[in-house]
Structures are given as C-alpha cells and as structure tokens.
Image 1 (cartoon, rainbow, N blue to C red):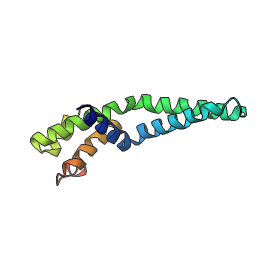
Image 2 (image 1 turned 135 degrees about the vertical axis):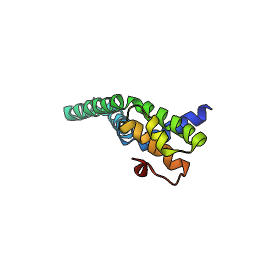
Image 3 (image 1 turned 120 degrees about the vertical axis):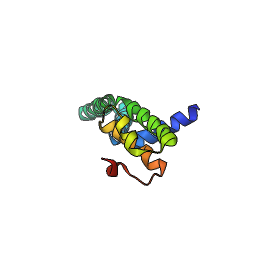
Length: 119
C-alpha cells in the first residue's frame, strides 16, 4: 500500500510542473551549499535564492498533496462510475493543482471522453 502511495505521489509531482520545478530548484540550491564557503558571495546568494524560490513553489502547491488527493479520488471515482463529466463536477476547487490530478486520472483511465470534451 505504501509503495502505491509513493508511486502515485511521484507520478503527480512529475505531472504538476510547478511542484516539479520546486523540487528541482531545491535540489539545485542545496547542491551548491557545500561550495559556498570557498566560493564568491554571488554563489551564496544564488543558492539562497534558489532555496527560497523552491520553498515558495512547494508552498504554493502544498507539496503536490492537493494534486495527489484529486488524482486518487478521481481515479477511484472513474473506476466505479466511468463518468468524466461527473468526476469533473465533483471537484470543489478547480485550480491548477486539482486539474492536473484530474487530467492525470482521466488519461490513465483510458476513457473515450477527454476533459476538454466535458467542459
């Protein structure tokens, strides 16, 4: 069960480009940290800026949790009812993160109707 959650989370992080950018910039910022003492001040500023930006992106997307929750809920709903329109209407807040989760679930469900046809 835990493996499935981690797999779903990584899939959602990859699909949500804002969350992915946050994790990548965090990794880039942290990777520069060991070299800061021996390098000019600009590298330290660059590292701090990258870490700050990444934390902002990850905060905005709530670490991708909203995408994951929508993806899992929609996937479960589509397995039971096989109805894209109702799955779309079930989402309370239609923001970028929830729409990424919805699109990912629809794409994996192999339904004939796409989200664009429903809107």
